[in-house]
Image 1 (cartoon, rainbow, N blue to C red):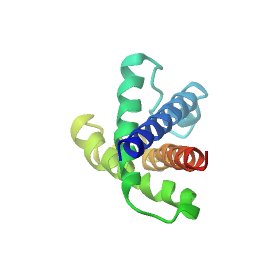
Image 2 (cartoon, rainbow, N blue to C red; image 1 turned 90 degrees about the vertical axis):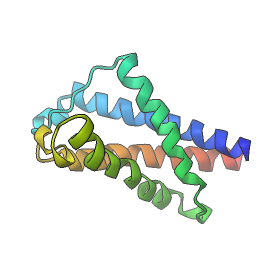
Image 3 (cartoon, rainbow, N blue to C red; image 1 turned 90 degrees about the horizontal axis):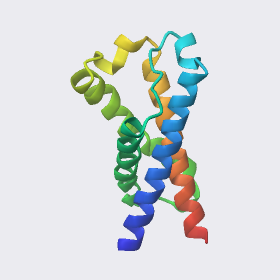
Amino acid sequence: MIRKISLLFAAGCLGGLLNSLTVWGFGVAEITTAQGVKIAPQLTPAWLYPRIVWGGIWGMLFLIAWRQQAWLLRGLLFSLGPTLVQLFIVFPYKAQKGMAGLELGELTPAFVVFFNAVWGITTAWWIRLTRAA
């Protein structure tokens, strides 16, 4: 069980890293800004570290039993957990950016769904890859 939990945490951390680099890259490339969304973080350890750790914690969702061949669907479905927390807890209560982060722009929810899908797909892929080894 410790091996499985370690794998899930590491996979979630990798997902968190790729999610963060995607968010940052979209900001640098001004993709979010061009769509009227004010999400363009600086790539600093203070911003990156908690996102990687939380990615690992969210990786524990993958303890929920699921058919192995459905890894992509599993990643997409499990990405809804952090998406819902971001939109309906973090943005309105912690960041004070309104429900679903709409103060950051009307398309904020769509970007959050996409960015967290990157986390979910990466995490599910890494779990599948390491179990095949």
